Length: 252
Image 1: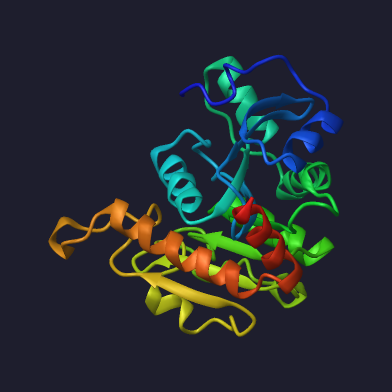
Image 2 (image 1 turned 90 degrees about the vertical axis):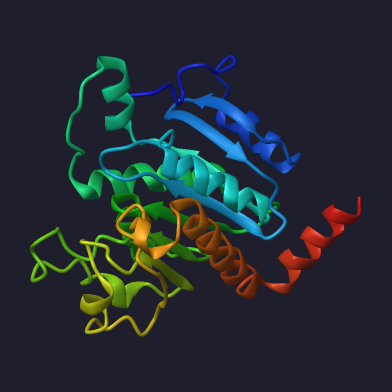
């Protein structure tokens, strides 16, 4: 495993974190619940983004996604769940805990990073992280949800759907899915009731948005496509007050 969260300045308390966010700062900070990386400016909006089950925020996929979103005005606030922090300390793999524990953990981060003087916080995530984000949005609400490679079912078990909580999601919801994703391919999701969400398929992408070489596409090009779609979706659902705030900051 790599070193996300291993090299940080002195730990900071939540109050100082909020001050830095309100001042428009970005950087790498260590908080009581673990490391936080803030990347980009919130010209379009802010997204608290969670990782998948087996790879953390320093994976190539997550790094490239955060870069692409930052280039398009989406500020990403990247966290890692406690079990993955433990994996780093022990230098060995371990499974994630029950999903309800991860929902509670993400809820604490959401409370910490939300403030009335900041743009509303969207929830996002890759695979398992997206599932956790969707469960939290269904339970507590959110400004919006972005699900990257949503695990509609375990691979090879299409009958085990993870959609029972979706009717409770009342916020704007975007799914960005590789058309060949074994957790929910184009052919499978066409039969799901996703009426409350917008789905964008990345042609020939797998779970990590990696296309086959014969397609003529690359993972980088699919990530760029996804970032364009996400930024446009967030801008579409940004309230006028937040849009004016972003314009005012850009004019300063």
